[in-house]
Structure formats: C-alpha cells, structure tokens
Image 1 (cartoon, each protein chain N blue to C red):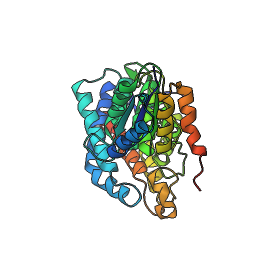
Image 2: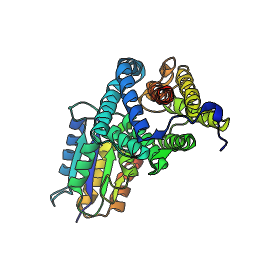
Image 3: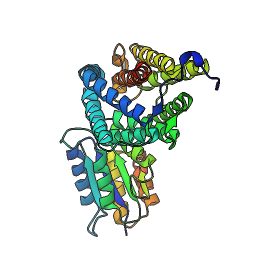
Image 4: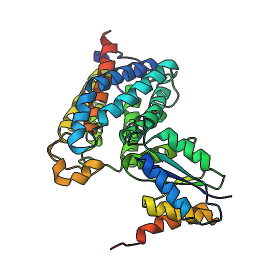
Length: 132
Length: 226
C-alpha cells in the first residue's frame, strides 16, 4: 500500500521527464505509483483536467494521492477539481512544493512506505533547501 | 435587500433553465466573435491564448448543454462550469468554471430563481474566483470587472430596478471595470512577471468577463421585449 503521486505540468514532456527522474531516484525497491498529466489534449502547452483525473485514478491505491503542479492554470485546475467532492479520489491532496524537487521528495518517501502526511511534509520541505 | 415589488418594470423575464441556456448560447456566440480580440489583448501581457481557450470551452459547454439540457437554472451553471474546467486548458477554465459552479450551487435546485437570488449566486461565484486565484480588485484580473458588476447589480435591485435594467447596469460596470485595468500593473498570473511593462494594456480576463455579463444583460433584454 503506497501513496500515489501525480505530476501536473503545462508541458507533457516536463511532466513525463520529472516522473521518470523521480521514479529513477526512488531506489530499487519498486517505486511508488507515479503518473504524469502534462499539456493539453492536442499536445500543446496548458492543463487538461481530464488527464489529471485519469492520472489520479491510475495511481490511487487507497492510501491517498499527492499532486504536484507547476504554474498558474495547473495549480488552479487541481484546486478547482479538489473543490468538488467527487472529481478526484478521496485523500487526494495538492502539495505546496517546488515541482521537480518536490516530486523527487514525494516519490522517494512514498516509495519508502510513508503515509500521505509524511509524503507532503517531505515535498514541502524542499522549499527550505537554499541554492544560493 | 429590498423585497418591494417594482410594478413599473413589469414582472420581468422568468429566470429558469431555458434563460441560462439562452445565456450560454449568447455567451458562446460573443466569445466566438471576439476570440481574436481577446487573444490579441492576451499577446503583449499573456500567452496569446485567451480567446482560443475560451472559444474551445464555451463551444464545448454549449454543445454538451444542448445535447442533454439540464432542468434547473443551478444545474445549467454547474454543468457549464464543469465543461469549462475540462476543456479551456488555461487559467480561465478553472476560474470561470469555479464562478459558474459556485453560482449554480448557490441557486439550489429550484425551477426558477428571483433576480435577488441570481445576484447573490453571482456574488458567491465571484467570491469563489477570488478564493481560488487569490486576486483582489486592482490586481488587473477578471475580478476588476466582476466585482463592480455584482455591486452594480445589487445596488440596482435594491433601488427597485427590474432585472433588465439591473443587468444593464451590471454590464456597464463590468465594461468600465475592464477599461479601468489599462493603467494597472498586473499582480496575478503570467502578466505579473512583466511588472511595470504590464501597464497600458487592458486585461483580457476582465474583458471576457464584461462580454459574458453583456451576454447575460442581452439575454434578459431580449426575453423582456420578445
């Protein structure tokens, strides 16, 4: 039983790549389920609400789903979906975290068997890592 | 809130599910007609997709609503909002989607609503937009058109105006609010990255909000005279 992770980006390539990066850094023990929801249905830059719903359903193992989003409409679309009770699986949560670092932290901790609160804390803690 | 009747304005149009379906048709048409201008407004300060995004969303919503017409005013708005969240692809999707879903839920499941209930539902919708996007008046967003429109609507109804007159006042307030975004510096969304360079441009979201309010005013006026 693990927390699932959904990565929502304006770009399909960004979402897919960050999902691969996070899973790759999660270690050997079988990474937590990760799904990418990037770009618009026609392959452009933007946000696809239906893709977010599909991704959340795909990674839901009943232990909660952690969602990371990159910019404006990605964040707003997840929030709008969360505002309605029946759009996303129960226990879905939008994390307040930087996209790449937060995704890696979330997938690593989820893969180690952490619960949703611990996954969220690890991802949100990524903001405290100063680079300069 | 005044509950006094206003006989000089007549009974006014009936605000039922058909009224909001006619609004949606009018909204989809005006967005289609003005899509190029909205995208042009979105070019210097945004990512040049506001018109095309909204056109896609309102066309999809209109098609879905016509295919399976909801039976209550509230449900027309909730379903339209859901379609916009699904199909717009930009920030205006969740923002307008939230506006319509919150407004639709506030209308409840009655067959008809009063002008005052419509006003309060719009206020609930606009509050939802503020909460979702975190914008306040003066941030150069759709809020700058929506808040004055709801205030004008409420003020006119309180003074005893009928729906047609009150929505006409709301439309004018929204248009003035949109024009008043020109000298503002953007504090939300992509345009905020531009800092002072966002000054001098009319906000595309405030502009589309004024168009949607205009469609609502026209729907009421056509109903009243036709």
